[in-house]
Amino acid sequence: MRRCIVVGCGGRGGYWTNQVLAAMSDEVEVAGLVDIEQEALRKGAETHDLPESALFSDAEEAMDTVEAEFTLIATPPWVHEENVASACEHGLAVLMEKPIADTLDASVRIMKMVERAELPCTIVQNYRYSPFMLAFQGAVENEDVGRLSYVTARFAADYNPPKSWGRRFRHEMDHALLIEGSVHHFDMIRNISGRDCEEIFGYGWIPAWADFEGNSNGLYVMKLTDGAFAAYEGSCTTEGHENPWHHEYYRAECEEGAVVVGADCIVKIVRVDGRDEIVTQPPDVPEPGEAILQEFLQYLATGTPSPTAIRDNIKSVGMVFAAIECDRTGRPVNVEELLAEAEERVSV
Image (cartoon, rainbow, N blue to C red; front, side, top):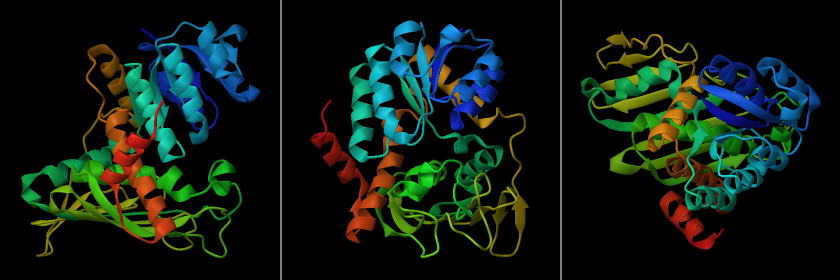
C-alpha cells in the first residue's frame, strides 16, 4: 500500500481525490490533503475518512507532518515548481497534472530538480488511455494501413462565455489554448504517430469577440521525425461544429488508407476505394486516470519510467513553448534546439 499527499484537491484535483484514488483505495492510501478551499478539503476528507489533522492549506506543512511516498500535484501550472521543490526536499516521488509548468524554464527546472533528487516523476496525459485512442494508435501501428504520411488534429470548443472553461484563470492567462489545451493534443500527436516533433510553425490569436486575455485560437504545422508531418487546429471560441474534450478529431493519412476518429468516438479505417472498416476498441480497459496511476505505481515498484515520465513529456511541453515562440516571432522553431538551449540556460 502506497501513501500519498494530494496537493490541490479541488477542481481537477477533486477528480483525482474523489474518483480515481477512491476507486484505488486498495492500492493507495490518501494520507493528507492540501487545498486553500475548505470545501475541497471537506469533500476529500469525507471521501477518505480523514481527520482534521490530515488537512492542510500549505503543501510544505503537509509534507513536514504526514508520512508518505509520493505526492499527487493538481494545482495551477504556475504553482507546480514550488510544489515539486517541496516534494524533492521531502524525498517524495511526483505524479503531476499537465503541463509541467507555465514557462519553459520552470518546466526544465522541475525536470532537473527531480532528476537530481533521483525521484520518479510522471506527468498526467490521460488522453492516451481512452479506449478509442488506444484503438486509433493500434490501427496506425498496424501494418495494414502502411507507412504514415501525416496526422491532423482538431480541438474546438465554445469557451467564450466568461468562466466557462472551468476556472477563470484560463480566461486570463497568456496562451491559454496552448498551455492548458494543446499540450494534450501535441502529446497525442506524438503518441499516435510514434514520432517526435522536429520543427513547428504557425500562429495563435484572440478573435475580437473572445472572452480571453491570451491567445485562445491557433493553427500550427509540424515536421515530425522519420519524414512525417502534422497539422493542428485549436479553438476555444468555436460557434460551429465542436470537437471538445474527449471528442477531438484526429486523422492519420497512411500509405494504404486513413485512420479517422471524430466527435462520435468511432475509429475507422477509410480506404480510397470507399471501403470503411470500424476498428474494434479494446474492452475492459482501466479508466484513464486509473491507468496513469497504475503505470506510476509500476514505476515506483520497478524503477522503469512510465511512458509519460517527465524526461519524455518535456518533448510534448517543448512543442507548446515552441508554438508560443512562433506566435512571438512569426518564424519556425526547432523544438529540439529550444529544449537544448533551455537545459543549458537553466540551473537548479
